[in-house]
Length: 195
Image (tube, rainbow, N blue to C red; front, side, top):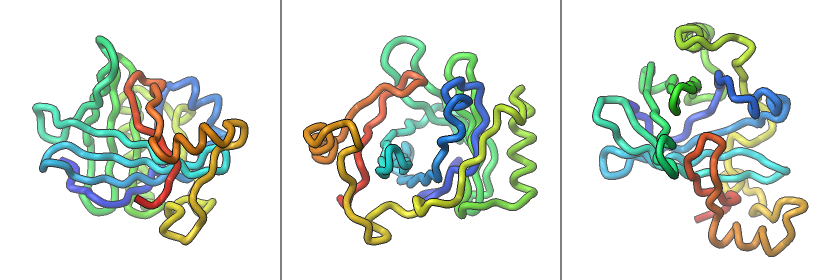
């Protein structure tokens, strides 16, 4: 089970996702905040930069029947994403598996933006165990100041992304946006701002 409420850093990800492969040069430092809801499900807020703005992506991991397993609801048949906490010491790292149909990806999270070589080796072993390889593995940068969300470091509130126009940005700030994730599940997306 993931006993890890609080802030985590996305350190690495292995996936056959073609979008990730094509855009890997644009990876940005990414943080995740985990909140335990009703003692079982997890509220996941992912903070990442896009077009110079820090965006929050909200998801809810619902408990599955087995210990350490969750799922993300999708729209339509076969759109569920299974999430399994593979390895964790509950305090410094967690390796999670995400599976939709026959497609699988593996993510490494750390309590700090860097992990030990031993943990990185474990991650790489997990990747190989599911048939993924080094050329499908991407490590996220630790630079750029996005390890804290804007209100933690006194930065101004996010503005509309370039090209979206002020109306779209204002609506996003007020209401957030629902968007379809490439893997088929919905997520709530909004620019980061104090709540």
